[in-house]
Amino acid sequence: MALDGMTDETLPRHAMRAELLDAETEVALARAWRDRRDEAALHRLVTAYMRLAISMASKFRRYGAPMNDLIQEASLGLMKAADKFDPERGVRFSTYAVWWIKASIQDFVMRNWSMVRTGSTSAQKALFFNMRRVQAQLEREAAVEGAHLDGHQLRQRIAEEIGVPLADVELMEGRLSGSDFSLNATQSSDEEGREWIEALEDDSPGADVLVAEAHDGAMMHRWLRQALDVLTPRERFIVAERRLRDDPRTLESLGQELGLSKERIRQLEAQAFGKMRKSLEAHGPEVHQFFA
Image (tube, rainbow, N blue to C red; front, side, top):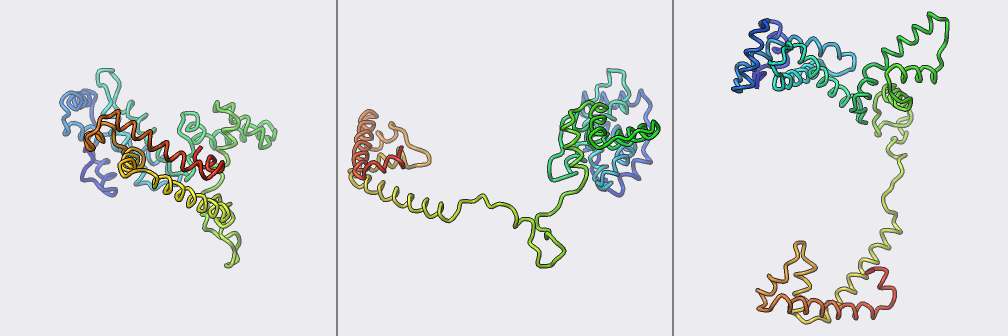
């Protein structure tokens, strides 16, 4: 890897001392990596533009992510740009790399903004990173005109300006308005206050349901045991191997073991099921609700 051996502390200092590449050298390095997978060329190309990655990472510090993490994400974007760059297009590598670096940082910021996924589409990204700026601009323009925009009007104008549905603006506003809260936080300042998690509805089965399921399960087990008891040892073996295993055996493998044809195994299996059905039906109509 082009950045191996560099720590979070040494990477910025190393980047500031890196060489500045002219267009011809840049193309030669990109071709060497593309055509020969020359890691030395990749290292030189990426190192030369790490200052660009660090500069772009610094623009996202206001979102609360550690600067070292932002630099690492910018580095990943730079590496991806170097891997996909086509030197024959006549575009400088820095121009191409800006998009990949920015995309990598933005994805990282949105992933770590909240435990609730903020969004991943281009429209959601545009809203996340531009909503506050557009809102401030609209408020300034309204103040110059002597107008006042209420909350609903402001959200509508933001949606129109960025080109997203109003519902997306309302949802994003809620996401950006506050941070995540722990469910283990108390509901009041009182030390005896309940934790918020205690107020969540318990959707697990109640005691009455658990008791009924245990009773029904025991009854089904008893009926099946009685049904199996009416079979011959060979029939029980066939049923167990064909129906009670996680990986049921084939008619052919059972036939080879028992010295019978596949057709004979199938007949014995059908015969066993017929006996079991009669045994189960002896318990009356209620058996159908369990074995329907």
